[in-house]
Image (cartoon, rainbow, N blue to C red; front, side):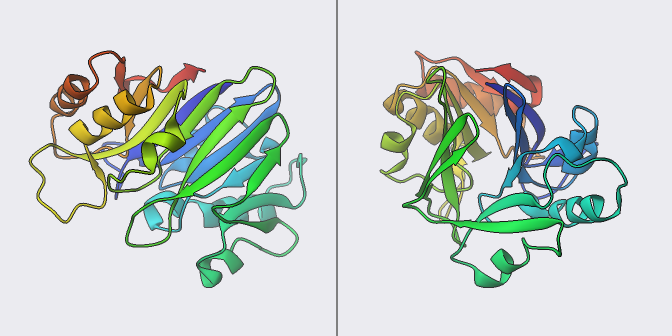
Length: 245
């Protein structure tokens, strides 16, 4: 399984880098996980978007969906051969208005999931955990069937007890790490020490800090997470854009 980080900022793009978007590949299967601002241009640099097998959105905040609409237009207007028509797009059903927008004519087709759903997408099996965020949002656990390799993405969330069991034993944990330790409550994203503590408790093999802040020294963010996870390599999404899992 291969992970390509297409965008890693939270909230808004900065210095030519977009917000949350990831390409997960296993063999010839291509899954776009979130589609934040700048996702389509970043995707075009590594893969013909018409060769996607599926899109999965963890929630409907704009920094995770901003480029989904233009991806729909791409499927409508581009003359190239499409691997799938319509393109399946998976989104949770707790927001009926945004879920309905996943279907666009004959070009994209919304498919619903809940916390109880198990999705079989080609060589991958996906399960979900509802997180704690101001809107419904879902962490996703992706297992590559042939190898048993595991990628977990926390999506957007504050710290809560259900995260560690869900992330248990992951080969790579993508953790929403938007704050330094001194961020006061209320917090709807993890602090760096919380991300590190989550990785340590879950016994993951690698922690990747993502959904990063624009106005914080990322080396400090990394150092705080590493101090809380002394046994685990802690990486920044900004420096690790392609990873074999």
